[in-house]
Amino acid sequence: MTSPSIEFFAGIPEELSDVRLRRDRSTGENSVKMTFVNIKAVQGVNSFAKASFNDIRLVDSEGTISIEPKSSKLFWKDKGDDEELAKIEIVFNVGSDEHWDRFMRFMQRYAEANGMEFAAAQEPVDLTKTILKES
Image (tube, rainbow, N blue to C red; front, side):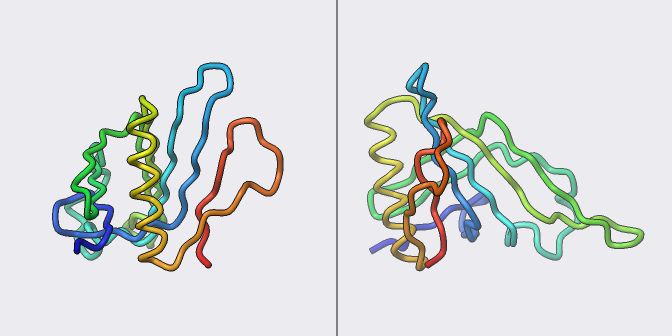
């Protein structure tokens, strides 16, 4: 059985730090915002500096979901004469209910395999549906 993983580069699983699931009430469009803090694909390798992370793979026992984010934001921390990648935030839309259901099955498997659980948002925010938190 395949352990669920999230990859920017094939074969290098990343650790998800946070995920926010949203539904726009006016359009019904679902979107996902994922945050990664310890990015294994670039640890110790500055040749990826200021790189674009324009493809992400979600791999589980059902197969691979390949996603092209609508945006990716890289955050840098100053290390004296150098900068180091601090975190990455990616946002992507999930178009159909079928794709949303598949994404949610992946997230359930990923959460279970990584000691995380789904929790409802604590404050009423129109666009926030759920938040994934470490248990």
